[in-house]
Length: 336
Image (tube, rainbow, N blue to C red):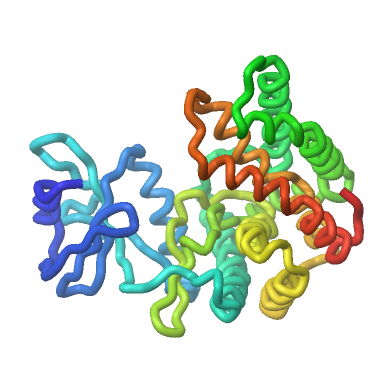
């Protein structure tokens, strides 16, 4: 994004006092508050879909979300006439990301997620009553993990046949067999009749998730918590949002059981977790997601050069194996 792209802002009724790069685009300080100006590559309907979701959530009382701003012609997407590049404008706040080293930030992030899920439940009811489906088609949760399992197998076969291995490849090859077994066990548990019934319930009720609830998308402005980036909002079991947030935090806390209890308790106080969702949460945690993510990224890359940071990430994933197994035994009472 360059200064010329700011010419597009003439299509909006705002006065810009100051600009600053950030959040993947340009932060604008205007006469109407802080805005976020982003280049976009998706079709218009992609943003119309997200706009319906965030506006409905805000209408139902969960107001601290980033909503789109329409241009003078009523569109969400504005085009630069010179180069054809397309842009969107969002309401924003001058806020900081959730601090993963601050347990009070983490607790606030989890309780905010529970409140968001309650609002998403209300939004799902609204969509059913209006006979509107703003949620894009997506792969079901269980199908997604079947795909991940198969990708681990592909990477395993590739590494097995590779004659000369790098440090990264040696670490991956020595450990991929046990991680693949964990993946198989997790996928098998997802095919349990109770969980299949839970997946069907989520599908029929139109249950909605944020879809990318990580600490990067949880922002603090004083004591107020804002949730951003709803582009992956979809129909899925909401416990998957809690899993995603908890997993990234717990990796940094070396799978500390007390931190996990704290997060679960904060969520449960606002939106009680059912027995079946607790079981599903345990199954999701049992899948070797970090190891899969690193090796799958490697498999689909050029493979010619592997950054030292990736070797470090892979080694850490392997090193935390016993801590994670202990966490699963203590919190969910099953073996991996």
